[in-house]
Every structure is written in C-alpha cells, then in structure tokens.
Length: 197
Picture (cartoon, one colour):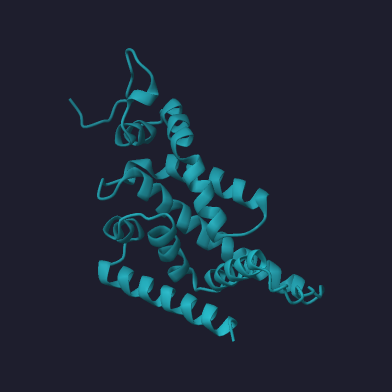
C-alpha cells in the first residue's frame, strides 16, 4: 500500500458536524463541499479582518475574501496545526492583503498626481462629533502603520486572537510579535495625542 492520500468521504451527516481541522484536511484532498463549509464558517471573520486592514473599496474587500479562500484551497495541505484554523486563514488573508495594499498604494500614488483630494473641515465641538473625530484619528493612525505593525495590531487587539497563534500564523518569533504590537500601540497613541493639540 502506498502513502497516497485518499479524498475524505462522509457516509452520513453534514459538513457542519466536522471540526475546522477536519474540514481543512478535506479541502486539502480537493473536497469542494468542505471548502464551502469553511467559507460559510469564516467568510464574515475574513471580511471583517480585511475591512479593517485594506481599503474602503467594498469590491476590493470581497475580492480579498474570495482570494483568501482560493489560497486556502491551494495551500490547505500545508496546514501544520500549530494554530487554530481561524488564525491560519487570517494569516493567509494578511499575506494577500499585504500584496493588495502595495498595489493599491502604488495606484493611489499615481492617481494623486492627477486628483486634488479636499480635506474635511473642522468639526463641531458636540460630544458625538468629538467622539467621531477621535475614532477617525485612531482609524487614520492605524491606517498609517507599516503593514507588519498594522496586521499584528488588527489580529491581536481588534480580532483578539492569542499572540502565540498569531506569531505562528505569521511565521515570526513571539518576541517579534510583542515588539510589533508595542510599536503599533505606541504609534497610535502618539498620533492620537498629537492630533488633540
């Protein structure tokens, strides 16, 4: 008998009865129903993640989600189980987003030469407007972070994933992860405090 993998076949039951790891293993053997089940479980998480990272372009978000699951299908067999499937999928999304962001920045830089974007005027001193202004400052501060800091901040602080899993998913030492997270938080704090003056 050879060491060849055989596709997983379910005799009875539904894919929602399978664990995330079992679904990913099935995806690795070419099971499209398992990929559909993984998509159903995690597409909202991936969408929320790329929405916080990438762009305000809704079509680009949808494209990144689709690209993430195509890459999950292509590389499912490389999953080693050192993190949760959710963290691994978000790591895939982070890598795809990095490439998309680079292309988007280049495109915006080319367009900026031809388009003058007006800046919003000063906001009223109303409590709701002040809160919105502060949130906008934080959002801008996060958006200006270098990609590596941005990804770590979103995964750890916004998605609240365990740091050890994030470090494994991004293939970086934990010390590097914590340093990046510290640097990201500090940069955001400095940007927001500087904006209040």
